[in-house]
Length: 255
Image (cartoon, rainbow, N blue to C red; front, side, top):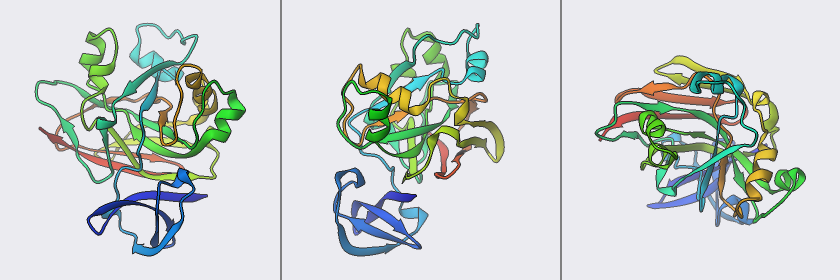
């Protein structure tokens, strides 16, 4: 298992690998076969940025049966994965605040396991998907719920700037198929599940998406949220923990 981070360093943003209490600076993103620069930074969570540089973020809706029951009028499981996208401008990091735009009367958290693609793929099977995934991270699929329900499609409700907190690390060498995922709102446990409860696992999802669009190195695929989604308000703190990956915590700020 190895952890990669994107951090602030000498007025720049650089990628690095965590070794003990240090960050070994890399000369490129970790999926690009980078070299070490020879520089080391003392690790400090305050320097963490979003562990992401995607060309696109592809997300999955309705991938846990209990979440389907809580969010739909019926509990029918979709016949195929439901996919949607967020713009890259939605990305923020572990030390950023989730914006609460004016005019919205409900904004929700959704804790999710996400993967980072390591190579260009198109129309691959599950084995090809497994081999193409570089590592795993945490994503909060922040959602303006009433807008999502109002619109025919979900782009507006999920696409606001800052509605995709990502981090704190990209972790390699772990099994994503049975990880504990929990979401806390102001220290109160709201979501608790295991990724083994997903209807479609991450390899199946990446394969499915690759048959629709080419996935490029650095792209993010987020695998859906379990039951327990709920709203937050300015001043609240949302914390998502995923076993073997880490903790993504963000405070909410009114715009």
